Amino acid sequence: MTAQGDFPQRHADELGRLIVSGSAASVVSYIKAIVSPLERRQLFAFAQQAMSKRKDATRDLDGLVAVAHAAIADGIRQAAAETDTAEAAKRKDFVNVIAYNLAADLAECWPDDLTPRAKKHFETGLAAAQQAVHLRDELGKPAAARAMAWWASGAHQLSLGRAADAAASFERSLEFSRNACKGAAAVGPGGDFHVMLASGCLGLATKTRLFDEACAAFDATAASAAGEAAVDAASGAAQLRWFAKRLADPARPADLKS
Image (cartoon, rainbow, N blue to C red; front, top):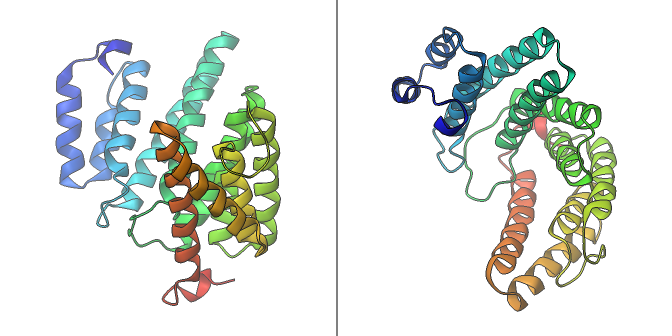
């Protein structure tokens, strides 16, 4: 953080204290009082990351949303105030990153993430994902980044029980993933991670064998590959199966069942 703007460490220390105290309003107020636009962006990013803690079941999702929404609003204002097109695009990219990270944090597909979620969280996550989709189109982001935004959109649509909409989003994610991948675009051992993930999620949305095929491809890759490729493949399989488990949970709130 300090390499980008070299803001005083005391800001990060005080922000950390406020985050631990559990007051999202105090976090937002503290950051908004900072004069430097750069430092505000850095501190908002710091706060979002510090509050995400996906394996902490007691984390405050509403607080995380409040901080992210404040960051997005500030980023939009900063972009509007820029007279230089390139600088305005950088501010929009900040909004894009915050929005995507919020959508990802609110998704229910992360293994061992047991934080309870309500319908409002998936609606908020979907809005953030769609904002990221729009901004990545506007900013001309590469296919891989656009695939991720469409995947996040589909994940929240599926969690909301909107299977047809989710399938359409996952199809877009799969299309962009295939355009982005450098190797084979087919689902199989050694295949591209994002292609297999999007295909597996599409299988979840359509209740087809695409899900089982993606899990099998990830398993085969994890068994035959080495190093980071094996770890990534095992993670992909775990993510798909965890998502399926959450969606099929008998204790799932009635307003989230398709």
